[in-house]
Amino acid sequence: MLKRKRTNTVALLLLLFAVAVYFLEYGPLWPIFIILFIWFAVTLFGSFFIRWNYHLTSKHSNKDTTYQWVSITFDDGPNTEFTPRILELLAKFGAKATFFCVGKNIEQHPEILKQLISQGHSVGNHTYSHSNNFGFLPLDKVLNELKQTENLVHSLTGKKMKLYRPAFGVTNPQIAKAVQQLKVHSIGWNVRSLDTTFRSEKTILKRITNTVSKGDVILLHDTSEKTIVVLEQLLLFLREKNLGSVTIDRLLEIEAYA
Ligand SMILES: [Zn+2]
Image 1 (spheres, rainbow, N blue to C red):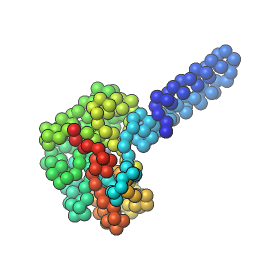
Image 2 (spheres, rainbow, N blue to C red):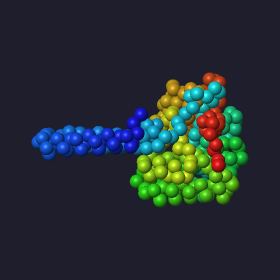
Image 3 (cartoon, rainbow, N blue to C red):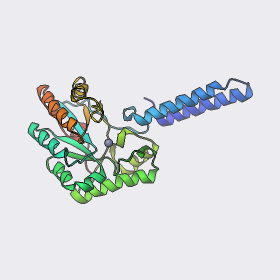
Image 4 (cartoon, rainbow, N blue to C red):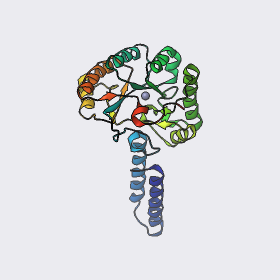
């Protein structure tokens, strides 16, 4: 798979060669633009698709598990309207999940965070503000975002989170450095439901059930009515297929807290 450092080195060497040919041999200009365009496109895709592991290596699934397990994950909560209903559904099916929480939402609903943990679900860091320009923040701001949420959860529960899911699944060199400095696991997914889009419950459910199998990590959001409808059908489907949902740390065989 493509990695940032290797891509940058190759692009730079090709660029130097193309520039040299242009100046020394009166070569054409277009190879320079083609190289720049390809480099830009690769960098862009590598930043948007966490599964490329372009800037850093994230964990997306555990297909080697010997258990009939998948892991359902919820991003962007806690949400006063939907998270408690999701917890009810999970309890009804005896399923465990992982909630990647946003710091500012935890501040508003600390009781829901405590409830998640007391019911045996895992909690991970999903930044403090989930700001739209997160992908453009400098390193100190990225670190602040992660530490703020980490400290908040620690003060409420005594737990130091080790799981981190980048907001929007966007990664870059700053986020890679922050992950390394804070010694957290970057967590992705391999089944994206697209439950925050305009798609119908039926389409979203089909996207998941068409592909899901043991070892998979499913991405949902505890922020809408639609997700609740999808979750109930998904839990029924998993039960039928004899698949259980466990917390992501259990599926990936890593620690959720330090
Ligand atoms: Zn998010």
